[in-house]
Image (cartoon, rainbow, N blue to C red):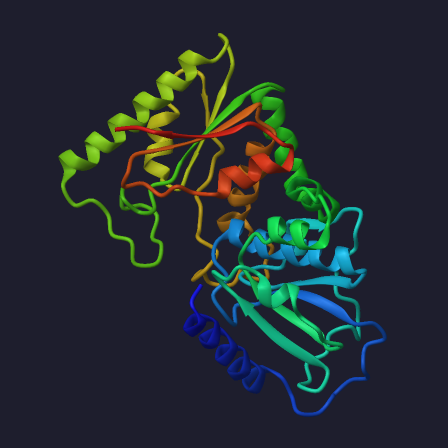
Length: 320
């Protein structure tokens, strides 16, 4: 991270403060100082994994220092519709949010090493926009040994509808299964994401699909006989083809990238986003997780962090 990029982030924070914070308090000052992980659509947040990185990092920071930790997650859905507090209550209570310049400050960390957070000295409420895993540097500088999966499980448990669907999937696949993840990032033309373009040449596209399907067969053959393979992907067309392989288990539904998506309607329809949570928790329940792809495919960290929840073995497999 260059000095210019850090300066750019500091300027961004000041602009956000002028745009979103008021010069006078409209409500009484909160009783306790709190650090709030913000996912409100006012800035780039990244995908699901990046959001969890920032949230867990700020929680670790607060835990080290005995500070109150909260989450304000409203974009493009309310986090509480999917995840509820586990052993730590991170929900914002009435009167806890300070939206005044006098009582709060904004920090935007993207691609930084975390030094600005670690060296932070403030009595103000922090509105934290971060998408990085800072656990290693926090443990090193704070003389702690926090583990990402442990912190995640202190914060989150599935909400009732998510748990109901997870229970149904676990019953279908059984207790012991492996998992393989394929992240195409719109190479197959069925997962619009930012400005990534699909492969135009059909033969080239078919060759890529063939290589990935063969790796599914290879992964199945390397496991003990009868072990199901959960296959997840951002490509619906690839999942459909993979589901035709004996032994493959697919979670129904399609994905929507969380950044750049429209906010969820208030009619309780969570179909565009619940698939991401189902994938994440089902990967966490596997015996082994593999992220498989060619050099042109995205080396996603989504499956790696899902594996961290229960300390599941994780590997990357490069296919040519």
